[in-house]
Length: 287
Image (tube, rainbow, N blue to C red; front, side, top):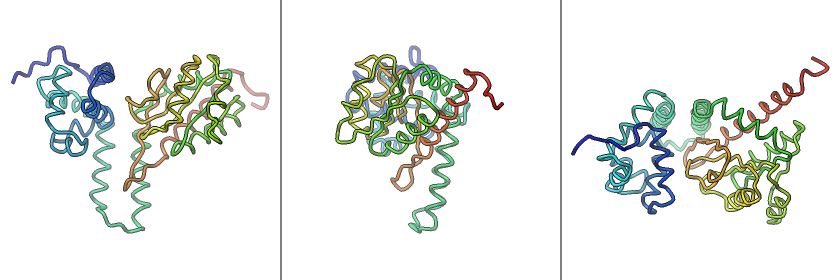
């Protein structure tokens, strides 16, 4: 087989862009592979096709077929593109490999005394990944959108309810006009009725995505309101039409997913907003 990859994405960023471009028209199986490539790049880079197949739930032949649809001769050429960039950045490699190493060291003891260690280590890795994956420019852009909005609407249901509630509370305390659409009584539609193109919706949801949050996201777009999505995948339904997407990769221990990184992110947004607002208004009288 030739190693010529002319026309195939030559960088990880180009690969992601091409996957997103083809995603809507792909078959269910190809979407499954695409989601895994986007969400688990370290697995795609460093694991064998047999391991990737087992973890993603698709046959190795489907992975090869997916790579060929992107213009590569086979899966190995696609893996090399991902691997070279991850080795250069050290971001996902550090997170994925350290998490697996720690889990292997702990084994499956099932002892209560080790749970705190496991969650603390996993959360520390997740926070490290957050620092590397979300840059200051993204924080600045999100803060600018919050400042520009007449009212900030915030929505997050089920597992995302705690960070959404905190963000609404903290922004209100910071003096920003904020409305928390908590969906009480199933009235989320009524709660978002007043949103306009002068406002901003911050929508928070992770797989499996809450139907209410997805519906609120769609409603806000229909009304012309810009949306900031805080979610876990480039193919999350919240990314469609969003002005900005902040991707958070939470820790998962024994099938329980944390919220530590999401809470850290929303707290950082609030504090950044406070300092930006102070700078815009000039020094305070007490300074």
